[in-house]
Every structure is written in C-alpha cells, then in structure tokens.
Image 1 (cartoon, helix red, strand yellow):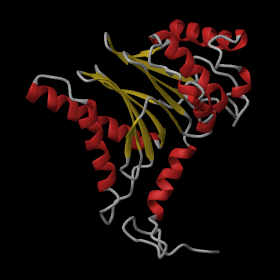
Image 2 (image 1 turned 180 degrees about the vertical axis):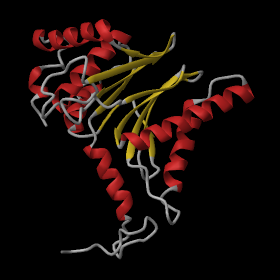
Image 3 (image 1 turned 120 degrees about the vertical axis):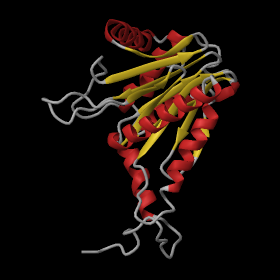
Image 4 (image 1 turned 180 degrees about the horizontal axis):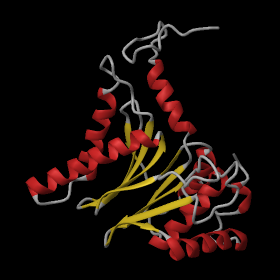
Length: 261
C-alpha cells in the first residue's frame, strides 16, 4: 500500500511544495455540511444544514453565538469549531472588559486567522479542520468573513462553504451578474428566505427536505442582536422560501437553479 512520506508532520513540505496536513484539513471543510452567508447594507444572515449521525441522535450544532454582535457558522469538524468558538468568546469578553465596547469584526477575524496559521508552523500541532463563516455588525457596518484552516481569510457580500456549496454559489451569483445590486437593498426577511433557498440544492442523503430540524438560521444587524431563528418562526420562513421558488418570485430564484450540484 502506498504511504505518503510527507504528511506525518504539518511542517514537512513535499518536493512539490505542498503541506499535506493543511490540504487534509481543507478537505475536511469541503466534506462538512453546507453553510451560507448573505449580507445587505443593514443585516447579515447565516444559514447551515445540520447532519444527524444516526436516527437516534440529535443534529450537530452548526451555528454558534459569540457575542451580541457576532456569530459563526461552521463547516468541518464540530469539535474544532467548539474550541475556536470558546476562544473567540474569551477574546470578545476581554476586549469589552478593557475597552467597554464591542470588538471590531475585522480585528477578531484577523486574530482567529493568525491562530489557524500558527498551527501550520509548529511541530506537534495540526491545522484546525474547520472553516468559519463569521457574521457580525460593528460601528463600521455589517460584515461577512470566511476563514480557512490555512490561515487565509476574505470578506464577502455572500459566500457558501461545505459539501455541494457550488449549488448555493450558483444561486447567489445570479444576483450579481449583469450589474445588479445583489442583496444590498434587501430586508432581513428577504435575506433569510434567499439563504434558505440557496441551501436547497445542497441537501442530499437522508435529509432530503429542508425542515426546522436540519436547518439552522441566524441573523445580526443594525438594530438586531445576534440571534437564531427557531421554532415556529423558522417553520414560517421555510414555508415562505419554498413558496417563493414555486411562484417564481424575485425572478432569479427559480427551481432549475436548485437542480444543480
């Protein structure tokens, strides 16, 4: 059996200039269930598919509240995500204690990216096998960031990560083709519906339909603290999102988009 000689340590480079353990971690993100983030001029919405390891188990948590103005959706190893979420909460609390204000989103994302990257430089460590969509609102406005195990991070107007995320990206991209204004002027409720609609093409396996059990949605904005949409409220948004697709509303959100993988 073939054995790779260059993946036993994260600091070992292959002759081709590759760090295999970092690539393995990024592959874990691509295997995680899909997450979507959408940003308007006043709000940010994140939505995620939740998997259940068996019929007798609950669905894995995919959306984490970090602070009143900030939260994350994760794709990859949930155990690693919990470690990072705890670290981010501590950073936000320390900042609020020292400066009596909420931590700026870009500063926290840069610190978490540095933490990701430091694990690719030290012998005996391994990269975090999780990617984050960081959604928040600070004094500079709404923000949506993506971080990766390699330490890279980018800010987006809309983004999807995880398994079959290309289907969600195809749905999202249609709102920016042809010089359209995208999601900028949409209301909070419209963002939520489009986030749910974009996830429809990412569903596979046992969870063939989007339900309140396998979908997690959260919102944060100008006048809205970070909160999860749950219970009857989420059921209402799910129903509205599906009806929006059947009735052909918004012109761009048609069912043929959802057939793509």
